[in-house]
Amino acid sequence: MNAASRFVERGDVLSWGRVVRRPQRLARPHFADELPALLDDPAATDSLLAIGLRRSYGDSGLNSEGAVIDMTGLDHFIAFDAGTGLLRAEAGVSLSQVLQLVVPKGWFLPTTPGTRFVTLGGAVANDVHGKNHHRAGSMGCHVTRLGLLRGDGERLELSPEENAGLFAATIGGLGLTGVIEWVELKLAKIGSAFLDVEIIPYGSLDEFWALAEESTERFEHTVAWADCMPAGRGRGVFSRANWTYEGDYKAHGDRAWKNMPVDLPGFTLNKLSVSAFNEFYFRAHRWKAGRVRQHYSVFFYPLDAIHNWNRLYGKRGMLQFQCVVPWASARPAMDALMAAIAQSGQASFLTVLKTFGDIASPGLMSFPRPGATLALDFPNRGEETLALMGRLDAITREAGGALYPAKDGRMSREMFRLSFPRWEEFAQAKDPKMNSDFWRRMAA
Image (tube, rainbow, N blue to C red; front, side):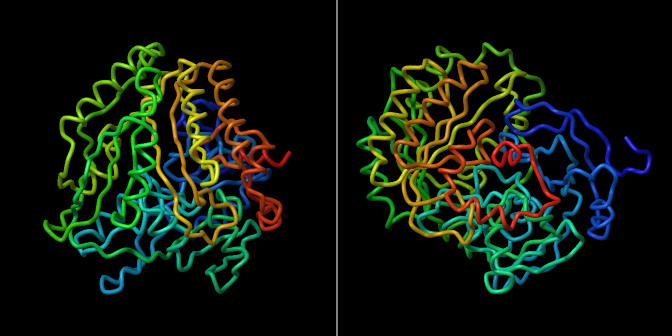
């Protein structure tokens, strides 16, 4: 590498799935005034990509043919109005840091993914969603302004009214419209740090659909764990919750109570072990079914209690599949997806089934849309796993559905373009300086 370069080649910069293993040239600035020089760095001649805590599963957060800027050093809060809930912070601030600041003041994120270890910039770039999509939509619905540094050095402020086209392209734009420097966000008011949660085991997909329908009006947050193994296919555990006014405003701590220090052997997660886990999980939740009060960290972020939980899948890593299918085809499509997974004999114990509402995101490339979504993690078994995911793609395509780039490391170009019919409009707004391994595959 050129001695004058601020970028260092690293072999340990991986996505959360840990399948793609290519060296990355990385720089980690600590102040925004360092960013312009990185745009002109010799290592960035080909392309640049701003990255965060790397919780995307595939290659959308990698740029092996150019360079990456690790934004986690730009983690300063700029302004927070505890009266209105308006927050402005640098893009490298994590959702965890946001919550530690705002929860004691009676505020919460308007929506949140299943991990708090995501940066604000990453949450915007992937337009993340949560268990309350039917009430709140995706993260992009709550962004009021953001700062964007373009590859030519121009700094812009974007909002739904100012530079509106570029704002729409940046929400869900996978970091390809420029470097998101800061984000202004409208938070949600809460009555305490706790939720009243109802846990309901169910025995079939028909029961899931009934629970989902009856819960939409009465509950802000809904989600289900689903069993895709042959012995229990169709059953699951439905959780629904509302914030409670009883309890304090104590924020979480980030000391994980368990750590996965090494990769498990590749054979650990197999059909037998996952079937046994699913049986235990279902029985345990059937035993504790009913109402319970939970701290937000328990309800929203159960896996954050295990540091490096992705190592459970072994050195070969994991591949995640997440689709959304429209209401008109949701029931038969979910039946077909579950059947294909069960017939394959491949194991997924982190299976999430939930529904999306009809609140549209301002983003051109937003993934959530009205219908049902299914997300699964599979241990990487090479061609065997890719063949299964190809079958799941075909079912999704036939149902008129879409895949989620943040969760997918092997989506075909055809599937991407069917999933995001406005991709050509987005491509016009893409910054010529920005690129990723994912976009090279999609745009080639």
